[in-house]
Length: 518
Image 1 (spheres, rainbow, N blue to C red):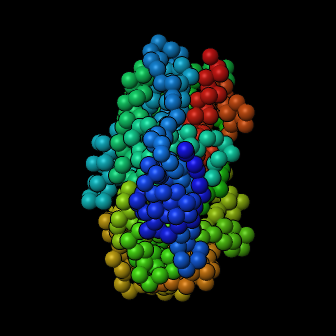
Image 2 (cartoon, rainbow, N blue to C red):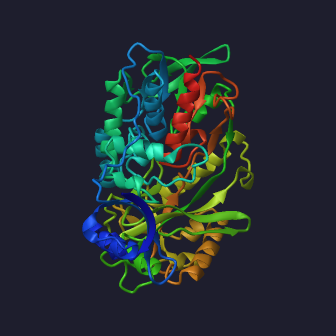
Image 3 (cartoon, rainbow, N blue to C red):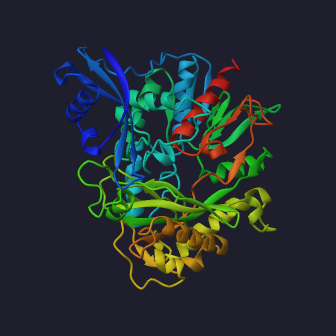
């Protein structure tokens, strides 16, 4: 007999199959010896009350041999000699587009401006150690895209646009821990995700596709309002319809499109800081216990959102047990981001704390085309942080209460940010409306969670790469560009996704529409 139950148990009971068998036996009047296995199908934490519970959906095998969960069976096969599609970018949108194209009997040619995921790691180390940013190989550019080395969280609200479980299943098929199919907030970890990405690339090549690194697309080949292919920095051409999945930091791609009079528009973003607390403080706050998370609970997360003067103020990309990293993608920039290893084992917790900025909020600059106004705002913040940090990857920082009270911090707590910090008046350096709204937001969050607003927490500037500042306009049905046939703007860089899973879903959707051309 096989039954499924929804149960609510203490963390210790959820921690081991032995405890689950004993609990289910008692609750369902089944002999423990008759329960051959308990599989957890879904897992979430309920920490709303003083006593923390785990909500589980379980499959119980009674006098039955357990069967392993069945992953999605994908139809990957040899596409050598099949019609080819050019996929620009090897982030989640590009990689999932390429795999879906193979299923649809099309041959993907993946062009990535950065390095492969292994070689890329060396360049990331140079940013922290020598403060040198390779503009083609950094936290934004390279195999795996911006998510490969900045956390690997797989939480999304994009269920209306695609099958999230399908995306998670494909990750598992390529080496991710099957726990991501169980946890409500799945997380691969920045230490595990590179191997998964490598396996995806090897699958593409084994099926007859191509993956080219350090191959920067500099132009689109257009005839009679139809994209026929691309040209790269070394003068090579690759022919076929184009899925453009270049990520939210490919500013040169936006400029190229604008020069060619291809329709794009300014898009709202959110900007602010990285906020870093001691993880023990967040554990105590979220689990309502002076002892913190104890033996059976994971590093605690949080999520805050409010409205201040008509604009959202919210936490973004929360990384429990994580690190703050330097995420600049070019010279004369300081940009920060957060990441967590799979065990979420560091002594810090961080998240972006950002304020919504819309195109109409910004004054026009006569020297900047209006379509680039938001991007220019983003660049100015990053340049100011670079100058304030001493023209290096040292980042400006300030204690949290000092920021709210508009006071300098005369010393700073220990931080995970390796390049170094410089005590700075972020309340003055940030744009006025951003600073003011963040201050009001922090006061509200501090009222909701008393220990959250503390001078033991640290603001590190600046967080600007929450999403693309440009949208590349496309038809809602065909997903082709509104002006050009054969061009499929895709993922975060096109303004149609926000994170690994939603980008992957959009990559698959673009591949499916592109395959209809043949």
